[in-house]
Image 1 (cartoon, rainbow, N blue to C red):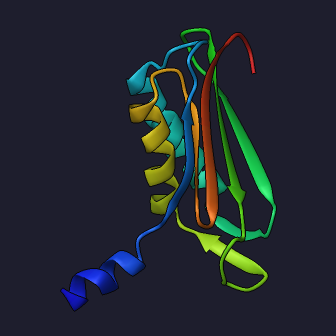
Image 2: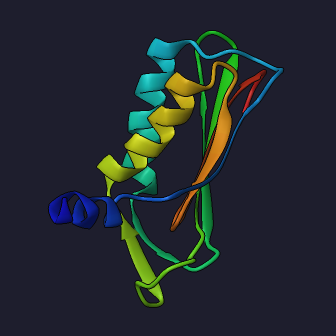
Length: 120
C-alpha cells in the first residue's frame, strides 16, 4: 500500500481538460506524424509562463497547431525541462482523446493541439 501511494505521488496531476466541440477533425495518421515533429522541436528547457507554438501544414488542406506552456505551479527552479516523450504523451492525449482537438493542463505543463482548416 505504501508503495502505491508513493508511486501515485509522482504521477502528473490533471488540473483541467477540454475537448473542442466544433471545428476540424483530426486525420489521426497525419496527426501522429505532426505530434512527433512538434515534440522534436518543443522538447527542451522552459521558464515559468513560457509557451511555444508549432504549426504544420498538412497535404489534406489542414494546419495542425501545437502549443506547449510551462505552468510552473510546482518546484523545479527557474528552468524546467520537458522531454520529447513527455511532450508526445500530452499531445497524443489531445490527438486521440479529442476528435477536434483540445487542451489539458497538468501540474507543470499545458498541452494544446488543434486541427484547423486552411494554410498555417
